[in-house]
Image (cartoon, rainbow, N blue to C red):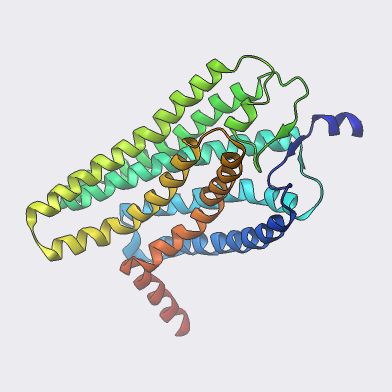
Length: 309
């Protein structure tokens, strides 16, 4: 039974050919993961406790923080185990779970960032109608749509990928179970699967990105037409943090998917994947707290209140 189950395990090659790098990455990933948990949990708690942060922007930010916590956890725990020990294996069930969860949450984040861009557009370009447009009902629908679209994508892509015959191939040249690396294990023609992956990526990556760019295009046009320094500062205060997060997330994902097929690109690709799966969720709460006066003010009020209790 033990030998049979071991033969079904996947081997995550990861960074096993660079032992010194593994030691450095273990410490860096562990610190980053702890910061991710603390920072994003803090944003969720602050947004839930402070009554001034019940506006749509912080409702979506709460969802983003929850996505980041779950997304990073689905990857980092197995990564730390493989970086620390000699065994680089992951069970078939563990690989399937990681594939479904990371794919669902990564897709959800793409849609959620587009929803947050639409919220910024409504706040800057339609300030008089903002409350009516971004009503609580619509916020719930948009947040639910982001989660459902992520789950739907994971269910379709993940199931199709796992059903591909692998003919005993178990070596994944990555540190996580993801669709591009897993379909390469198939012992059948995967041309149709690659087309499906391309089309899905086009929809879930480029379509939200196009909506984000359109939203910020309208925002820039509205601010320029006002020709007011105060309006520009207000727009940057509203959109600056989100723009930074979008640049980090989409920049790293785009760089990962357009790289050439070479051994250097594979190593570089793993480092880029490490950035958007581990580092970006750590930076998100820092970006939103350091650049956002409302969040810093809420933290100050909560700390001040606790000191006087």
